[in-house]
Image 1 (spheres, helix red, strand yellow):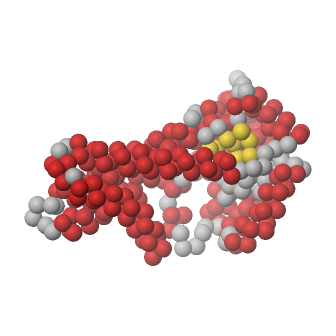
Image 2: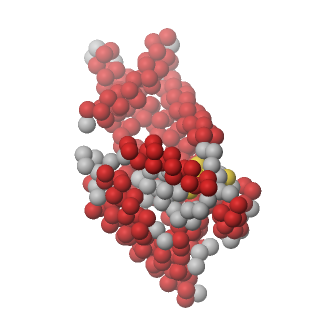
Image 3: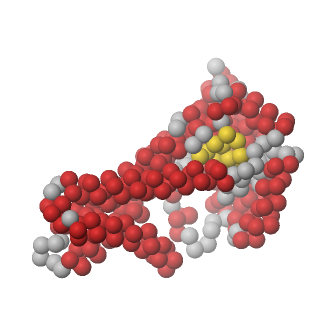
Amino acid sequence: MINMIKQQIIGIAPLSICAISFFYFFPAMLDHFYGPIIVALFLGWSIWRIHFNNHKTFQKALLYAPTDTHKEKFEALIRSCNIDPSIINLRYAYTAEQTAMTVSNMIIIDPVMCSLCDEDSNSQIVKDVFTQHIEPKITLTQKTRLSEYKKFLTPQAQCFIFKHELGHVMDNYSAKKLGTVFLSVVITTYASIIAAKSLLIGYPVSIAIVAGMLVFALLDNMLPFLSNVLFKMPAEKRADYFAVKYSSADDIRAAADFFKKHQEIINENPERGNFLTKLPSVLTSGHPDGKTRWAYLLKLADQKKAA
């Protein structure tokens, strides 16, 4: 908890200093309605730019891509979804229990969990890095979950998950996610400035500043939950529907069974000391609960088989 508070202060302080400095040098701007809006938009753009650059840096740092027959196998999956493989970048990396993930037009496959790339020399390099440098640092609970996931992550489920990530690429998920970051910072900054401004009359400036920072901290913690519900969960479902469109009924059922088991493994192996694990996954990550996902995917598989 103390570490979380420290991280919160570290995150808020630079933005607060920027806002305070602006109104210190241009105090008249605080009296105009557009003053807080300008500051909020500028800080929103600044944070958006940082995240955008981080995405680019992250993509450049991933060096290992599928080779030979493994590359052909993934490209065949891409073509089966009516997508040109040349517009998709493929890389191997440990994804911290996510199986696979999307950054812009790059799909990152986790060879620690996925067996489709077991024989690829590049995937072995990533697994070696994981074994030597990452595995010693993760908790016993995380190791247990990884081991259990692999037991139920069948090749059919992996194909579905890969197509799910393709759905994210075609949905411009990364760009939209960066948009929600921009919007969240703008709303949070504007609200905190208005809160501080409302206390400038009748209270010391220090009290107004602290109030503004508290409002910022509150919204900074709450808006990600709201974003997960309103943005990420619908995006996850759209990606599932995309994968369903280009998958067989058997592959859909295999994925449904994995998501159900995945949820059971998480429930049986919660991370100690993390109170967020007690909250619904739709709030904390934007992913539907595994059992809920299992139910609607099975229904879609039945509909596809009957069609």
